[in-house]
Image (tube, rainbow, N blue to C red; front, side, top):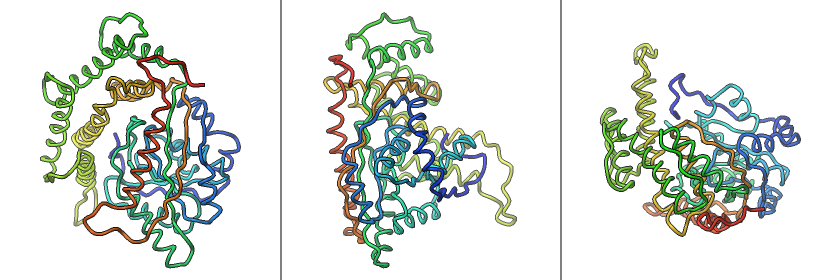
Length: 420
């Protein structure tokens, strides 16, 4: 669950020293972690010189990567090591609450917290200060959350452009120079036998559903229906859990109806009014904020937090998380003629996260990190009522790079040879 109810939010600042990140890079600890925990065995850097040039020029640098896997922030350590720098990164508050070791490691690698359920002035000011002083490059994931759809980009959040422009104003006022944004595309390519991996993982999922074992196959005409059946089974289980019965028909309208049921119930409970133009992601954010605000609201006279049963608040937070999770199953991702090995692996891993709470990261992969040319940030916002020009440019650059990188994955329906 991404909403933390065990304690009120407190800002976690970044560790400012260089000793720890230098030791992590020198001892190749990120390499070991990625190999052991994420099965990312190899990497390829493309156009790292573009970042090196911005560093030499003394710019305030914002790195804006796509965000498809939990490994993304650590993968960027390879890029930092290549250009001999360290990074700061904004990370969701809930990541600092998994364990004391995780919190310790995140800070030493340059991460600081952001409270997604409210206005976190300290996090924003820290991000602006890092860019304004050009202390180190700052990593902000403009999609906000992971999605496990490596070939697709979710709508970008406007907080990225706000931070960049505010820092650009400060640097202009002090005469220190520019703030630039480097779009960064991260693409994971399977370097193992995706057919065998997919068959094995589907067998485990089918076993968990008490289904009869399917015969081993390397025929997509047999394997793809199995994957869709498992997806439908998961959706049916969630419909029964939250609505009372499974519905019939195509998956998309069923998924959308379940999302509406989940969010609508929470919105009514907290008195939230849905605006016609609001996206599912915006509604999810409002529900999360309402849950945290209601749970941690204290007595106005004493300022003390009353004793509350966290169970109903946890259920509402989990409902919002589920709504966002269901949205991460795009309809076009497994269309005939577009099915690659990475798309099949990602879809199976999303189902595993839903059922087991954790994906199987045993599929060997190679990370490609491509740095685009710098976008100079104007301190001035575009005309009122029109799309943010910086966000539009960033969106276009990332989509173009990801589209090109997606063609490097193997065609799953043809069963081509592994990437070398």
